[in-house]
Amino acid sequence: MREVLVVRPASGPPYRVLCGEGAPEALASAWDAAWSRPVMIADSTTDRLFGGALASALEARGHDPLRLGVPPGEGHKTREVKAALEDAMLAAGIDRRGCIIALGGGMVLDLAGFVAATYMRGIAHVNVATTLLSQVDAAVGGKTAVNTPLGKNMVGAFHHPRLVLLDTAALAQLDDAALASGLSEMVKHGVIGDRALFDDLEAWATSAQTRRPPDDLIARAVSVKAEVIAEDDRDRGRRNSLNFGHTAGHAIEHAAGIDHGHAVASGMIIEGRAALRNGSFPKEAHERLTALLTRLGLPVTPACSFETARPFLLRDKKNAGDVRCALPARLGAADPGPEGRFTAPVALAELERAWA
Ligand SMILES: NC(=O)c1ccc[n+]([C@@H]2O[C@H](COP(=O)([O-])OP(=O)(O)OC[C@H]3O[C@@H](n4cnc5c(N)ncnc54)[C@H](O)[C@@H]3O)[C@@H](O)[C@H]2O)c1
Image (cartoon, rainbow, N blue to C red; front, side, top):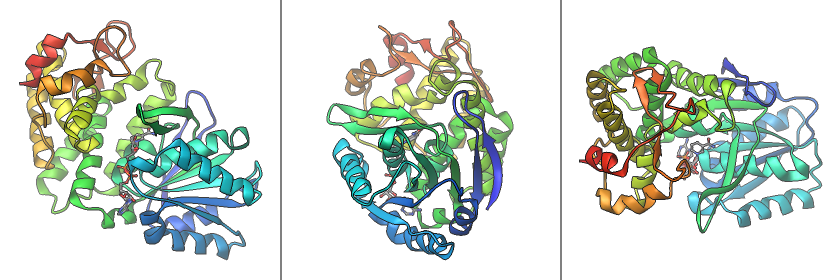
């Protein structure tokens, strides 16, 4: 593994991001002497696939990891599962110098990060991200949360990890749909923050034999998020730009019951079209975005009607008496919007037209 960047969040200490193969050895050698016992939190799939090697590497350095497991899937990112993890840590005598190692996709990272945020008023955690979506998105930025019956990510905290490992060897185990989901967020990062990344994703997609992107493109996609976080890690301004495609995308995800990355792909097409209509996004850019998503096997038409999605659009967290979207200004740049908060009100009628 090699260090690809250092995240310097607007609030909170900097942390390193390592990317590549060999996560167990990299974690063992980056272990901070100030941390006492490692607490590994994985879901049953990531524990089975990667837990043994990680535990062995830590044991070889004289550590005695406490291994805790949760069932896989979004349905287990709950307060109840969090409480069970905390009880297990308390029973094992984990003190405030303990360090949680979150091993898995975004579900495990969000859940374990939230345990770290509140256990003994906050302890250290390391993210070992094993899905493409979690590598390019959830692993950095410090958002942790659980779901409640009334909504996703409704209870949570900002708590940055101390170290992030992007285990790209783990991607070999992911199917094409899971890879495409992560690719959708990588394209989004290109659109809102890095024109060269967008160009290189296009070039790679034209010749790629696989949906597993090269490490270099993964690292560059994370860099876009890191740059945003350096300016705003609390959703006060530029961080909102990361929500391009997400107002329509979340509504489609929930109304049609489809995967996040696929929903966001069609969400970017809809919101990109709204930006095109209000003159803030060039037509040629929208055509290239459509072509790239199509080539990556992502949907460019919404999986449900506007009418089905309407109630979910009205419930979006960014709304402030209207429906708000984070729009691009051109390929590689987000639109700061009328108030410099990187969202703009979009009339429902406008979104409905863009849906078609
Ligand atoms: N905090 C943030 O900033 C942020 C950003 C984006 C998404 N998220 C959250 O991330 C979650 C979605 O993340 P996800 O898509 O990684 O889903 P996930 O963590 O649920 O993983 C999907 C499935 O893949 C399995 N898996 C994980 N790694 C694997 C591997 N290498 N090979 C084979 N199977 C593997 C998991 O066990 C799980 O069954 C959501 O809860 C979302 O809210 C958080």
